[in-house]
Image (cartoon, rainbow, N blue to C red; front, side, top):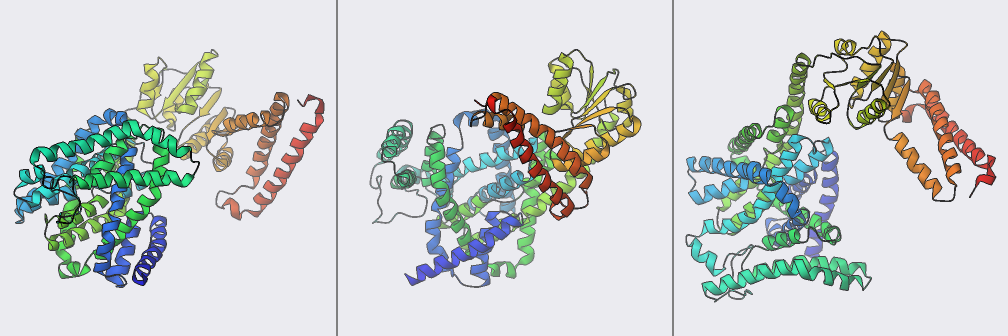
Length: 626
């Protein structure tokens, strides 16, 4: 008992310290868990290989839970809609990478079975690190980000057949084994093991196996709703957690009994429940257990990494690591171009997926247990996977550098190929995103001519498809602005997403036309002050008016009459404009607001003035109160 508590304490302390540090450094939780394992294992020797081996059997259940949650997040209809990228881009990446790595292994003297297993292991990338990085950098919705996600999703799904295939590579009688049902994730079957198929003829094994899979399908479709209603009637929140664990553990056990991968069964159950009303409840109940067990898995993997292997042949390990990244990046680059990715999206796709992934640890451990790869190869593979994951932040930094270089070249190309602006009008609208579209529609429907400029060709083409004319070109370029009629225009609307470009455009237009009325879009108060300094007349915070209207709805539903709420909205709007003008005089671009004492003092006094003005407004017409 003391040994178990000691080991648990060591694991938890290192995880609590290492993982937050890793996340704050932008390296992700997976690398934090690996670092924790390396620290308590090879570095400090607080946990031995024997203890890590024992814990690994429990930690592997985190992988089963992860696949269940992945299944829950995969709506079958969404999967079908993504079939081209999943099967095409994702399938080709897995197939070509497996083939290339296997060929290289055969060239190095490995057997075909070991080479294929190695290719499967290194074909995968790190879902945890890549998705987190894409989210942090706001790249998920880009073309490169969506393609990257599609490949990661295809890889996650491919883990299931890989787990089924790997044991076949270890045994020459593959067909006999497959029909006997002796393949089980987690190792061999001894005489004391529980099995529903042991001793059955081939046709009996097939029937029992199909019956087990069919029971999961039918249970997911028809039994979950009544069972959840029964649990709900108890009004005990812990019962939901118990049921979620029962589903995962029960299906995993059933799969073990018929000689199939537990991960396969839980993944299938997750997909079947993806459209159910209990999906989010299941996910929220399972997620903490999945996170802790998966973290434990990565810690035990880190604790088992033998750095003596690296010390004996550092050049070989580094060379194999860089060679793997080069092979994967080359294949990804070719596939990305073939599927229409260009410039920064192509570099994101190429470099974002060039590492090996956390499921590689799973397959390495599983392959060693199944005697697919020898122990000495598993030790090297663990090091290579860990090193490629540690290099991933550097790959994203390289992506940022290459993206900037590519962006500069593409911008220069766009400048040479902009449309010839052959119309002028009283209103020039620079930027035709959601904000600019509404402004344009309102002005045009009121009978006034507008000239729309934007350097996003897709946005311009989208407008043209609806019969609205626009011109492709950079609105900050003087010749384009003058061609659009800057000298004669009465109003310029600056609705660009890029704030630096907006400020540049406002400043230029103010210098060229001091009397021109300039309306500019801002994202926050800092943008407002900068645009105000640049010379904008009216500055619209993109969330301000919608938030103000939402606040009026709140007042109407907590006791104020429609009239009172409208008056309060009006008073707030007037005071906010006044406050912004006052604070703009004290704002300093070179000083954070938290350090600007004069700004903070005036902001506090203005907030007090606002409260007094609002109360006075409400007290002025008491007879209007409903």
